[in-house]
Length: 261
Picture 1 (cartoon, rainbow, N blue to C red):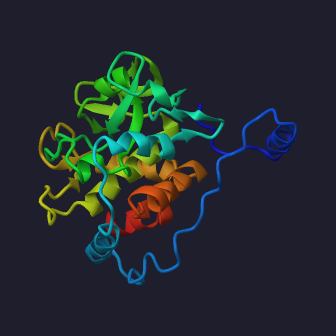
Picture 2 (tube, one colour; picture 1 turned 90 degrees about the vertical axis):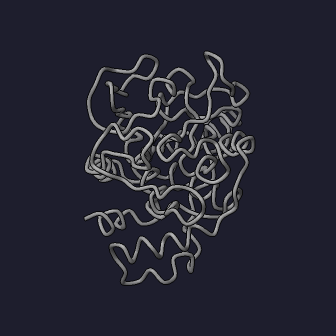
């Protein structure tokens, strides 16, 4: 289960256990982005800010699809068990070695569905760790390429997640994460690199069009579930160890409203 912040008492208790050698060390704390990473964004808003952020975050290394496995094992490592990863939708901790395509395995979930813009698993949008997360194979299949919205029936194997014929609603603990991953993709991929121009819209059933909805709901999720230390640390790991770019909406949540008022 993903834990979003411990109490002082719980932290003290954990420290005693750590000293006694009964628990593994906690994951390193998140760090601030380099001071000059967002240079040039001062005073910008709307399309101008979006264009500047695109310029900044497009300076990135690109992974192969096979390299994504190792990336996710680092970015989504369970702080309580370094041999496991935390699955996005279920919140379950599952062995890193259980990656694959069979029932009971976890695989590589494209939060921005790879058919929305038809980029598949191509290096670039198809391998961008900022929107790829570990997910149970069957839950991933249930999500399929649906847009995001509220409502539906609870998903088997992932309590707190809901789906219907044209949309998927993730559990409350990761709603904001999902929103920020989708909005990152719309800034990173603007159609100037051989891939489609990805954009958010306020509808579902986008199918293979390069759009993802529902924007109004994603903004609500972003506000209700702000970035936490887990998400910030994940941003750090991608920046420091893999792609060397960042999700600006984790570092500056206020930029969502500035670009999409």
